[in-house]
Length: 454
Image (tube, rainbow, N blue to C red; front, side):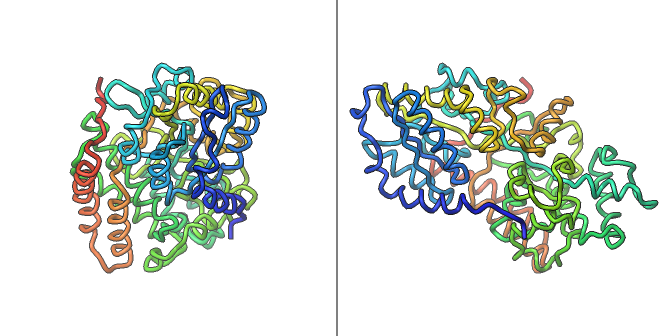
């Protein structure tokens, strides 16, 4: 089993207990003439670090910062409840379009603020807007793709049967597929349990396939059409998704009929213990990998290749879903205090150190130089593609959990042999249309599509 820190679980539980009494914890605006900050955070794994920043900022400025945290499964309901109170959060996290649509009436325009001005160009590109107003700003960039073990690949390349001479020869999906299948055929000689980590579909890790990987063919379809969103899709690249999923399912340590119950910790463990060469996942996985049997220098990352035309021109996927918003209904002095706290977190030495080194975030602000990078080799590997001139694949909006559940359910039946692939394709295409229609009915709007050709 992977060696994991469990501190964040205890922290999340403790903070969740305090959320129920948030109104008692908050300060009234009259408690401090300088204003105050109430931050409702959705990332329990870094609650201690945000509290550290809050304490330091209060020490330096005298401005009280109250950090409360709710876990992802109840964050939106907690946020909705808190925003309706007289002493509501002055800043909060917004993740994804459905969340944005539900709270946009509370969001203060950000485009003229100092903290917005510190964003990188890429960071500004992914902010969420309504009409001409920028309403949220990202505070962390995450990346996902195909993680691989350089040491295993290097050993494979010494064999007479090897299809490549080094990992640098893996330049497209065709090469990747030939290497994976060859490594699987020679897994005993290589001392492996399989070439690819198991594509587990238990709910603890199904998001790798019904969310992250599922966005790739749709993103490519939008790219062909020169836009970033449409309420209907054709599914023109779902066949490529199928080919890559099959590649993982056919070349992993787990019997395909058992993939529906394969939990994520077991999947990550296969890679962390050096039993497989490849794993589809993201930069956040480093916290589970470090300290096991794969050295930092042996961690590499490939883009999500699956045979889509032109995909070699693109990098790994950049995810900016975690964004900050400011409550426009807060008092002027509380809004000023909140914006100054945001700016301090991304510009002060203390703020940069905690966010980059302790939280391990890649933070999309120009204030972060080479010395302010997180100690995460997967982030370095991911960012190397844009440095080499590859185009960025941004995370597209998906409708809701129901769409993901439809894909996961049909995918599980398919891989177990109890369902047909047509059902998976229908879950992608018909489910996309249905769930965005439901979103429009419930939320009153749809994401704005940007012109990629302008």
